[in-house]
Length: 294
Image (cartoon, rainbow, N blue to C red):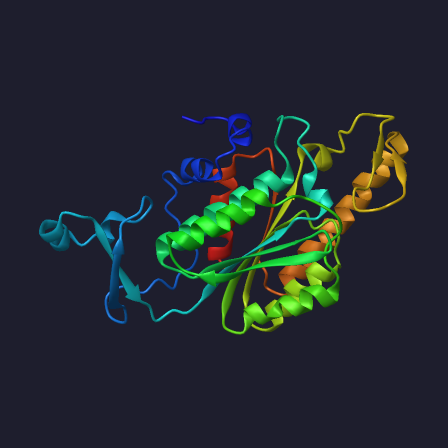
């Protein structure tokens, strides 16, 4: 049993981590799961690990001695979009847990959401925004789509700046129909091309839900005194963290995230702030519950 954040962070198998986190987590992504009337049988497909047992056709099993699950055409056409900030600041590591970074936490949370979407039968896709470009995985359903999305998440690296407004605008083609968008970032840049994209999506009546990640050191300003730091997304600039800088940092950080929270509230975008040292399952559950109280 993987029991600690440290062990999880050192596990290369994203699928294994996701199965651990989702064990006992009984939440869906949206309240629009139709059952009974309005859900019509479409086809069979072979059972794969992770499918719900209630969808297995037991009569067919008795006839052919193989497990098949029933696919259904659903009245709901809401697609799930997972948006991950892969800019350089997401490489920020925990000072308390070796091997744990914002990027690791973010892609694991989104991987869990992809697994839940697959179990629900929802179409889901992935958008990676970093190193000045957008990588786009079109939405689809099923286990193959889950494997594709998890592979993309596993390969994601935290590099460079966020894409500019033009690059992000070009990605808006994915949002032509009603969508549920889960976006994870540290949102250290706000306003930014990414925040403008999210606000634009909200204005287009998409359901946008945000998760802001930080480290405990960032929250407490507990960086080593006298140490020098460079902004990974800037070419120049070296910053010393003395007592005066610490006080200024705390004040600026508080004002920044107060502004982010206020704007999200004004535009009805549920926002959860979390540190990467928290239990991943706890953060995922809190995010889903927060979004469910809209």
